[in-house]
Length: 116
Length: 117
Image 1 (cartoon, rainbow over the protein chains, first blue to last red):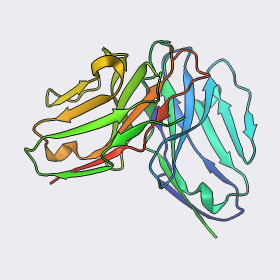
Image 2: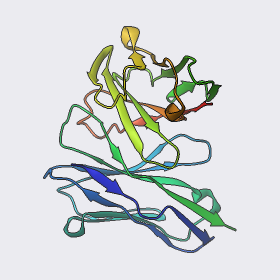
Image 3: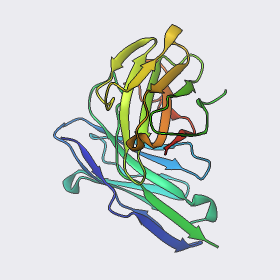
């Protein structure tokens, strides 16, 4: 069975602090895809990143970075020098190898509040 | 390019009533998905359309839910009769072409918040 666990329900930080959002996944597939989405107060889900199971290279995009470790089945997301605009709910998601569907398995989300 | 739009943004209905949610995907996107988030829980897949055909409806909770996508453009999700446990945020998403081409990720709408009282 596939499952995504985001153990942190809510995190509060002060602006400029670094923060890491944890994501642990379970799957029996050898090929799979991992995602992070951001849900700002406006409500829409904004795509942030997709990683393939065969590519463990970490990725950095501006203040965002992702650490994918197959050995621990984790795909953690770090925001460096957080800003108030980073306040949102962040969802980690998993997809299997079927190329014909974007049926995603989501975690329960982590609410990040960044205070000025 | 207009994004995925959903209507209404909020809906409050009484138990036993009928509600119809609408989703307009991004123009040209063949794939359309419905997802739902019940309060505080994970976002769960409901179903997947490819054009007007249902590709996968394994996530539909029961036969009180009916999704349609006539003409392969916009989609509707009807809940009849609504129950208290149907409350949540219903998301629609679309993607272009075969989703295995992951250069085209899912684009989500703002969601419809449904409250059944």
